[in-house]
Length: 369
Image 1 (tube, rainbow, N blue to C red):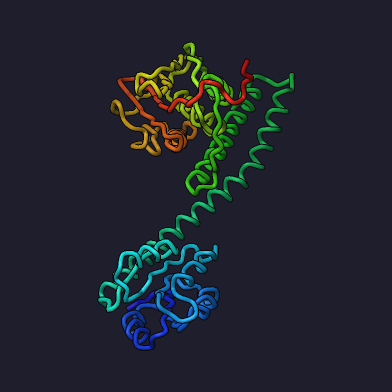
Image 2: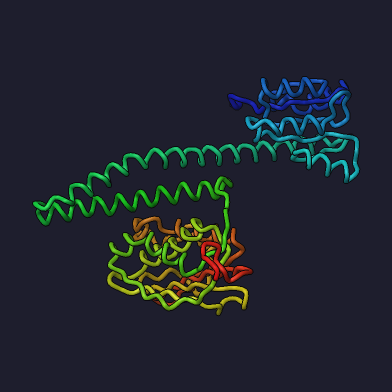
């Protein structure tokens, strides 16, 4: 029978030798156990032993389990360590105090051995999943940042070479192709970094009142290359003087993502229609509709969160950032208490985003009379 090379580590903190003996008897056959009898020793042991789980008694002299829990949670290097409080106190207020201190779960003495084993297994599995997710996030972030420098060099030299008037048609087409794909790759890198920051909370919103029309203008400017390469034009209906309270950069990114996705779906040389109204909300909401004709994407009236990485089919997977556009847009819109929908009928696809209107119709960057 093969065993794991590295057993999971469990730190037992309890000043009652009998309790420690019982817990060790239950867990030692499967896990590496270290037991200490005080809060001070527990803090030292967590730094040196680096346990996966801490089984922490609440009632201890000098430093109780709540304080030990708070101090462990204050150590960033132990942020994924799971803490299970062990106590004879069955009252709800005791549990709530433990959760406020940062505990993950609570076991009441006398505990059932099977329950303890089950909780340990569950939290070890959860810690493993969180560790994998953190590694993936860090790898994506590092890869994305490291990719930006060579991509910027490629784009810079391609642009410089395209300024050469003596290029043959074949050479110009080849350099244009290099520049186009380089811009798509850089765009994908930027979106990957943004999504990573949105998922782990590093992207903080800074909202202010701004005209919706101005946001749209900045978004159109941002996706200029995608529209140009797709030979797609825009038909923008006159916008109402609507003010929204949003994070300008994030909202421009969200609208640009919708426009970029529409450009990828649209037929070459077609027109993307952009309109605004409140057909999908009420008087205190405004909707933006982006309509394109081209590649069909599915059923009608589907919330966009149902398609976190919408591609359509494998044949179109190489067309830019694919469903990443919708995934980012949906995150941003939801963070602003808005909604986003995808409607598809035949070859026509419409993206709809609905946002709350600002309480004031005066944008903060304008000068009142």
